[in-house]
Length: 86
Image (cartoon, rainbow, N blue to C red; front, side, top):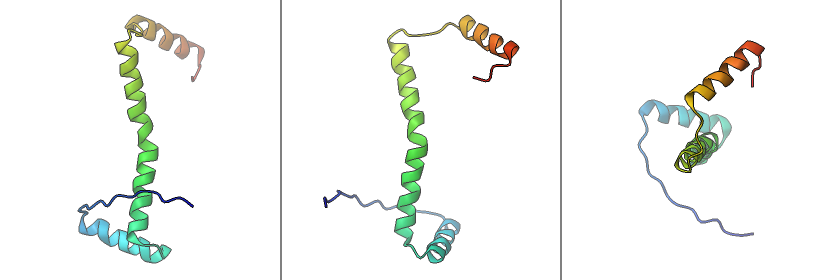
């Protein structure tokens, strides 16, 4: 079994968030550190796609792969008229 490198992170949270984390840790019999790590991992998983999609769009624009406003408008109107959702 391999060893995964870890880093230490110190942060400040509100008294309310701390109390909620205490309660959740007690209810789940998990440490606050475990719950905080899970929350951070989940946040990253849920939000990393957005940064990747933005960068892909910037890369496309930098490479000249653009769509005119008129083409987008026509596609949108065509979908609206046909009832196409995607």
